[in-house]
Image 1 (cartoon, rainbow over the protein chains, first blue to last red):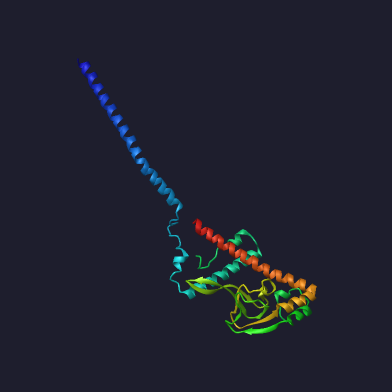
Image 2: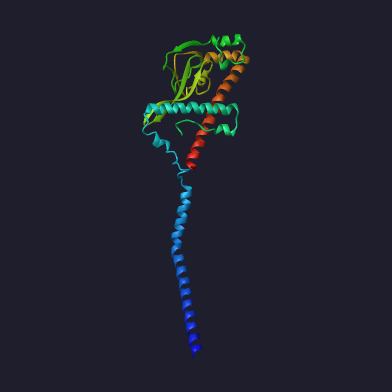
Length: 114
Length: 154
């Protein structure tokens, strides 16, 4: 009788453990399925964020020249354009003296584009 | 005696004959030598001073003459006078008191036609002046395109 009761208890315990395990497994897969669209959205957001220009090396990217020059007096703007033309002229002259790709695309210090 | 890029390599007496075809003019500061679109009847050699070559540009809904190039002593300006359709494609203004020698294009063409060796040398010099402008602005244009591409791909 004792052996029978012990066997029944073990069977019930085993059944309970199996039910818990089954329940946990079912709930987990359901949650993953429910979370999948949200995760996809996050992945898309991350990919888009990578492609969009964002802050680099702890500094914000330079503002667009159009916005930056909207408040500059026209005389100052014309002087900047003139200075830019002179610098570009000099850079082009350097390129013509020794034609190579690095001189052609050398950086400018012109305030009009920096 | 004017040392001009257009007369490079010519014998002094040949240069003098060509220079004798021209007329010296002194421009006060900010005076206009020629205007964009004008009929180009003369080619100019800068004797002293500096000329600003400009093109109109819209800046904040205002038309402004923006500097494109500067020419100084010994350099040739207004070669449109020798190239069809013989109209100036820029406006030239004196940056300071400037003296130029105006060579009438018809007189120059007649002289060069009568002296083929001189004509050949002057034509080569003119090609060099035009070619330099072309190469310079080609490089400047490509630099601007490069910046535009970098801005678009940033």
